[in-house]
Image (cartoon, rainbow, N blue to C red; front, side, top):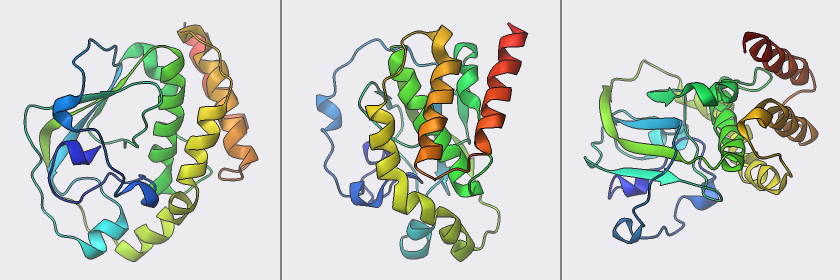
Length: 210
């Protein structure tokens, strides 16, 4: 996704490593259509959210192109993080962050689940030019790398398995679909079985608030 906003070889945290050099359609060839986008991520100039491999070997800071928007619909994947992201009320159930995984993967795996369920609702996920500048706090890059290893190893498989799931269409099925997606992640052993109790509690609490 970052390739649409920069000529640099840069990718968002969570992108499968074997997709970094994969060609994308030229920006000027993308169709202009109206899209329902209740999840919208703005990029960040300066020190954006990239993975530890990028930070260890490639330069920062960076400035992205201005005045661009790209909406990803059904079948188009890109990880997105918990930074500078707007969620509209009808997508609130998809805000659930898994607890039984590393901190560097929780928002990335949430983004995969949210995108998969969004497809059932006819939604796209919008990425737009930066509206913030980020100075990153000090991190141990090698600790970040260690926490990202589960993603380097499994993100491609997670996407494939979620895409193959049979889910139910419609916003009223968001909770059921969320549970189904986490059953798949538990079956893949990327999150622990204890996650399911939290997912079901989240869904139940939101249903009580309706």
